[in-house]
Image: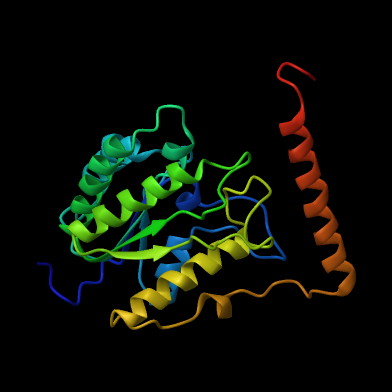
Length: 239
């Protein structure tokens, strides 16, 4: 068991949601929820997440990259973060048991090097078109099973999906959505006895939300949502 007071900080694996990056929202940069979590804890951040990754990528590419590059590959880190499965469950080759076996291996790797590990479960309303609820239920069960096997914390995003928190693809968080996820993670850590030094919401200074700007933001979202729905309704092969 690693000592209780390391300071290597937060180590994160995952896909584009954990990698972060994208357009500003009300003057707030789109940064990873795991990075906002590290800032809330006052700790350094080490991220290996890659856009488009699935759990096989975590095991086969991200973990080997960490072992090859990290100055302290054995840790101990204060917190390990893992949010993976969104690309798995949306793919044609989804197999719940295969995912579960790989998920538990990734959690085990983090648990060996981190005082605490946190795993995230996906929103129930995921993707456009939406992912089959049965697949999502199997994904959540696998994540929870893998976490329980190695005493990791689980943070649920089941009800995550507010319009200003999720992009029109209903997959990727907005800049403010990333902050909202971090706040959920920090609440779970605080309940587990971790000292949270600052609420990430206090570290951002969004542009003034005037009525005009709010309406412009609302209409922009509606416009993008309609474009997405029309694209989905278009017959295959149509332009």
